Amino acid sequence: MRPLLVSVVLLLVAGGCAAPQEAASARVAFPAGELVDLSHPFDERTIAWPTAEAFRLERVADGLTDAGYFYAANNLSTAEHGGTHLDAPVHFAAGAQTTDEIPLERFFGRAVVVDVTDRAEAEADYQIGVDDLLGWEREHGRIPTDAILLLRTGFSRRWPDAVRYLGTAERGAEAVARLRFPGLHPDAARWLVDERPLRAIGIDTASIDYGQSTGFETHRLLFERNIPAFENLTNLDRLPAKGAFVVALPMKIAGGSGGPLRAVGILPPAGSR
Image (cartoon, rainbow, N blue to C red; front, top):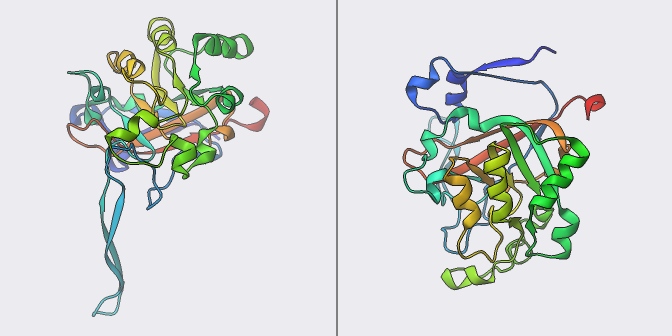
């Protein structure tokens, strides 16, 4: 099948994030293939940071109206950084791009999946390092320029058990010190921004920094370069180490520091994996 050319005007209807003047001309090509949902559902079990508000869905209507037709509508409330979500660069870098300012091209790209599930299973505080990235390159070749780097720790299999996924089910500021999950080491983040420019980065844990981080250096290093992050991803085990394509569109929140994210992987043909 020929690659699909998708007008960004249509993507904006689906929730894309570009300035109006960019929308009229930008176009993105991506391949056809099997789709993989990389987002957790938003419901009463959605995991959020201990200091963030929980997701809530209020039923407004759900049934037959007096006129005899069915009608359903809800109100929802959610933190920007709960569930599968975007971290916009402004989240940890003053003056960096807000959710609505991130160029649409950042949300589309070739996927590179670095798998550290064995190490993360053995050590909840594992930090993915430069050696892990170089190990991937020794097997698969250089990380492509403008790739979307996806870090697979295997922790998405623990969702929605907050104790196993976050390290604690407690809520509030005091619970933050008890967070235990893997992330990207700041040295690796520094290496990436200097040596392997990325389009975006994603991980199947609650934060691109590991749970015990207090300075959030990895966030800061990436976001100072306007590299957005996708957090609480799932189903990364269904993507090959290379060859897949990612589409990750957040809610377009003006001035936002993040927002709910629907991320999708497109698998390459079986013979090319």
